[in-house]
Image 1 (tube, rainbow, N blue to C red):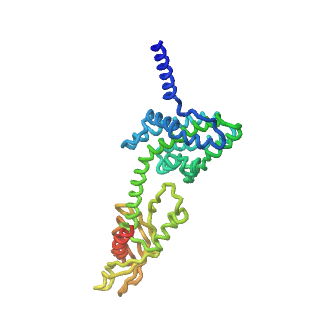
Image 2: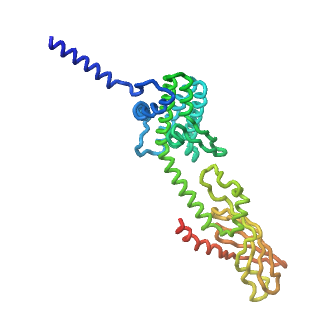
Image 3: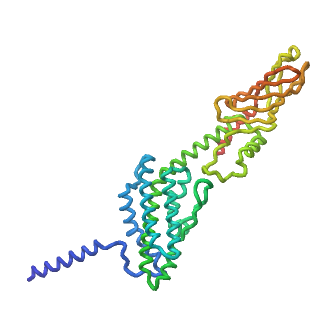
Length: 367
């Protein structure tokens, strides 16, 4: 009898233990109401939602070990595809304001999938990064809005998850188990999206850093290693390349230097040789002005041409002579001039190049 009683007690204990350890972390101890819904979802974030995200991350091989960029992309794409599929099914079952909420989340997930699949840089930085999926950042219970990048990605409005769920809960009645369950599944998808964005965002951060260094080096070359520019040249270049009024609207994030330099009334010294000038004055110092010209600053061969007027005080020929100035690799400038039937050659000595070379160390110190 004692043995039977002990066995019965042991069975009861085992059944109780099994029920405790098998308890679903998504089960609630009390029915959710409008006032308790969001706090209950928050309590489940570490248990129910966290467990779901961990399981899905393991299945999708979403981890935080060092990975090649292509590996991250290969793993992130099917993860976003799963999120899109899950959220789409949730939207089909949604009603009232929850459908709008769900469609907003679905739109973000689709953009994240597209930008990740296409490796569109840097607008993948918008929809496929952690801050786009953080329910605790803007403000608690909402996803932050995303700004439009013209020609690459649309704007995304803020997604007020908490407010919509609380209003739906109030409409359901004194308690709202259905709203809670629907909201829990949506929060699971959002948290999984944040995990995927964090995983893929590691390579985006590195890409952004590399992109910033590349842009910085190009600006250094444009400002300090190309043909020197005066303030008027900079203004004309910005105007000609339509960058003045588009500043801050670059589709590429960090703006690259203009492709061409333009010059207007740009003075420079040089030496001019005219064989028909008076003896002893064939080679003479000259000052020339680039009336209008352009230069492709990163070209390695012939890079630009300008219309010039050169002045030199000497006898036998006109003091002012017109011509064309040809630039090679943004460094060497040679002009062909003419007047009085005599042809001359000008070798440009743009002292502004010396000035910009001296300016570079000062700029580096300011950085």
